[in-house]
Image (cartoon, rainbow, N blue to C red; front, side, top):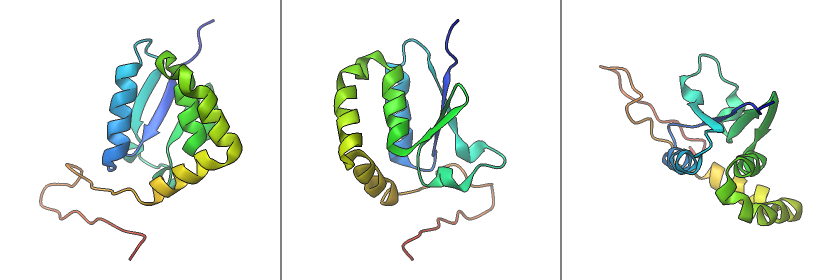
Length: 125
């Protein structure tokens, strides 16, 4: 029985998130990952705005744990899995992930409707 495809919900307003998903697509020669911008979903959980989310076989993972799950699906990244788990165990993985996620820039490029101005919200205001 073949495993289901993992769905990666990324933020298409985030340049870093979009670039990461592009790299993962290129590494996914086995076609085990499916990518969806959560911004295109009708009603998405607001938690998705704070961290990467993946769904695999009915299980949800987010943040640094989601990155580990993605790495498990991509054979070229298997070599770094021990380091990812070590960083998780030490608490560094989650710490670094949260710092990066909080400080990322969101730009809704091509996401505004014609004739409307894009409003970019910032938690730092």
